[in-house]
Each structure stands twice: as C-alpha cells, then as structure tokens.
Length: 90
Image (tube, rainbow, N blue to C red; front, side):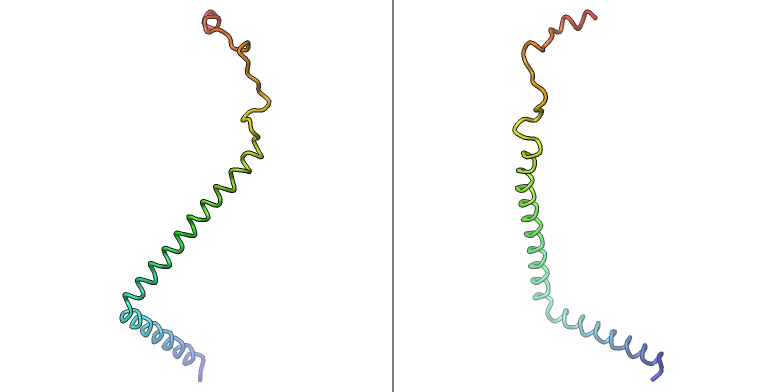
C-alpha cells in the first residue's frame, strides 16, 4: 500500500470510530449524563476539600510568620498620644 492509501485508511478508521462513539452515546445518553454529573460533583468536592485544607494549613504559617502580635516592634502607650488641640495650632 502506498502512503496515501495508509493515511486514507487511517482516517477512515478514525471516522468510523467517531461515528460508533456517537451512536454509543446516543443509545446510552442517560447513563452518560449521570456519569458526567458524578464526575463534575467529584471534581467540585475535591476542589472544595483542597481549598479548606489550604486555609487550615495557612493559619499556622500566618501565626508563625507574624507571631502573637501584629507589630512586635511597636509599643503604644497613653503618654505617646498627643492632644489634638496642640496639632491644630501649628
């Protein structure tokens, strides 16, 4: 067989396979829809589980990075607060 005949035969087999697949789907449409819905539900569940696990694991890293105080170098005392009237005069 020539190369063109092999290519044509391959394309013919692919076309017959696609037609057979479409006919299979047409006869089993309810089963296919249920399977697709099940796959989508599983994917959504896995994504939600990954998001929840990601949030839960991010909380300890946040506290390790920031510590119990948000600004450990700053200490605020009442003596550091200036009255507003002094600032208005400037």
